[in-house]
Length: 554
Image (cartoon, one colour):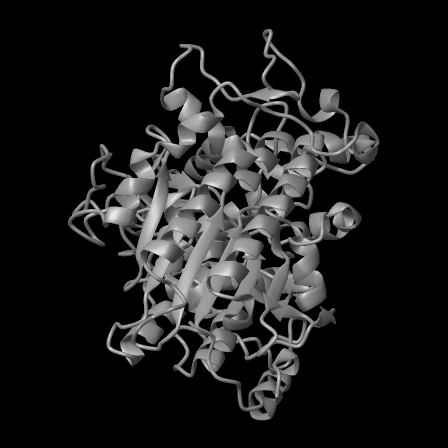
């Protein structure tokens, strides 16, 4: 398959990338600590829409003291959590790094494979299920942190934390240490891939049971009611059914049992309280690992993935009052974290990067209320109907062997035994799918392997999203504003459209970064080459981004 660099004219000219590398100024001394933050499921549109309500020290600090790339994109077509997190510190596209979804179908077994699944490792002190995320085994390339540790004999420390295992593991790379929230205990855990037992500072943090402090508390709006007057009506985005009372403010942090249990700890995920716990753990990591004050005099890396915004946007959509308020709550939490970081390490010694793994569309119902062509597609029925169509057309028996949309797998062995060409069956599937409600297009394996997908923006992003080994034989593209999934409320992401690709990208560190806003097309894949340049290490093996030289201090 041809190399997919940023030479496509609709994205960015190769000459720009070459010029940027050539013009890069000599950097200042390396930062003592690099903090890489990923807000799960944050579209840049929300940052712009609610910016006037931010406080002084969170997003506003990043806007005023850092570089703000407003036209930054997750530059691949399947925009989900694992794929986006894999991009941040590898600088690679899915066709190279191998993470093609949160889950994908193992072509050999036709069973679901979780992105950070590794059955040779288990969680420490927590029950482990076979498909739990325990290591970066499936990540096929290295990260900035891996290169940094390699360059100085593993003296640099790379520590990551997230509400989701994939958020921490894919930032940590092969050589870092990942911690993730255990939603059945409210503690932070790691796996045997990283260590045999916990450091004392982790044990102290967990023994204090910090998640328990929120039991019986409510999440209530931070701002006066007038601040939310332009948000979507709760009856549209969060209709009540069956006496459900928990989907409106105030959101109660409790459980039906009246006890601290797994349901309560799980409920914290869809609230600002999980973000607070994650940032508190990051504070403990800075102190416990002495991050930013490495006795060897080398830089350290702290990765923080904040998961709650994704859960809230899934449930209510980014147009909702819940999502709006959560972003304001997160803004204040970031302000407190930056203040503490300044006291402990010093912001003058720290380079901060903040981005997102993907954006979010509004709910189909919201789009429909604005007269857009929008809706929901029942994926199970869609694939069943496709299977029946191909079976009747080619006289086959269940030619669709498995699927995890947008990927569909075909029975090539049966196709060959019937004397058929696989491309003919693929293209029959593509033609049929393109006629179905909510479907914009589809691509077959033969097209993708030969690199003959149309060189449009959408075609390029979908080509980048497809991996020869892990992806399906047919790759589906939804129409704008349509999603795969049943139900009558909530939304999901994963499309190649701007609402899912355009994410915030901030870089702050006055010794290294010029403050200011930019509308220049930028990719999340540019983070890794830029950090590698500033840290004076080679870029990760799969990196295809560019150094953002125009925003570097001379």
